[in-house]
Image (tube, rainbow, N blue to C red; front, side, top):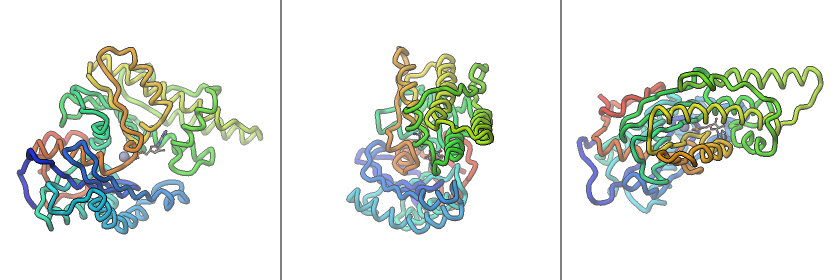
Amino acid sequence: MKEGVSPTDKRNLILAFESSCDETSVAVIEDGHKILSNIVATQIKSHQRFGGVVPEVASRHHIEEVTLCIADALSEAQVGYDDLDAVAVTYGPGLVGALLIGVTAAKTVAFAHNLPLIPVNHMAGHIYAARYVEPIEFPAMALLVSGGHTELVYMPAENEFEIIGETRDDAAGEAYDKVGRVMGVNYPAGKTVDEWAHQGHDTFKFPRAMEKDDNFDFSFSGLKSAFINTTHHADQIGEKLNKQDLSASFQQAVVDVLAEKTQRALADYPVNQLILAGGVAANQGLRERLERDLSSNPTTHLVKAPLKLCGDNAAMIGAFAYVAFKHGVFADATLNADPSLEFDWVADPVK
Ligand code: KG4
Ligand code: ZN
């Protein structure tokens, strides 16, 4: 495995891997901002009957899919191993067994073809999906909303991440999936609840936890409980509630809190860009609300991750990997999966 190399003037091709949860993905990325291929094999159907991701099932699928994804990614990009400059992989946070498959595959390719190996934090990858819209201008702020995380991340520079606020309990996506389940929606429920929300009205007035608190943290478990209590109570008295109105009311509460906290963060941290990223960044209600809020902001402009790159994919991993490549962040063959990887590692190479 080569170490200590850096990007050159010719095009730099990175083979990127993502396998932290229920998507096996391999991409070929040129210079961190051009997608030559981005193969995503989703396992959602296998997990739906269990109502959520089953880690053992996820690992098994990753093993089956990863070599096929590599072959497809190289063939679609019309490149061979000899054309590559580096290999990159998500090594955390995520499901340990799932991460291990990507890490092992990436290490194997790097070793076999004498390529440097770049370790990537999954959350940094989510933020860098925005790089496919336009270059990121620093300082920037990211509202990172996914199935496992809800964070406001301040980025003074391209490889520096400071979490200034995060959820104290459930992640936004997790709350969507749970209330969706109560309404009989298959996992992952976010997209359907979002669609229903657009057909209904905020009639239930659910609580907006911590909306006015003097910090940038979030809490969604109270909202989830209020939702579940409302539906259970209706069930007990034989009342049928309108799912569209329930969805609209839930979504309005989530969006209000996310938008309010983001505005406060922007007031304290002046930035050039607000980046909206993560699986929940696909939410139309949230996208529209932030567009409205930011339209009158003279200094900060909104960069929304492309809809196709909001969910887990290897293209976003390749985008951040290019930054790590420039900063000489490499791993050797001892790289291991780190299921609870923190965000503050990126400034330094992995020891
Ligand atoms: O980032 P992601 O693909 O996986 C994680 O790293 O967690 O996010 C998946 C989450 C799921 O909870 C899913 O329900 C949610 O993103 N999601 C949405 C929407 N599309 C996906 N939530 C709200 N509105 C959507 N349109
Ligand atoms: Zn993710």
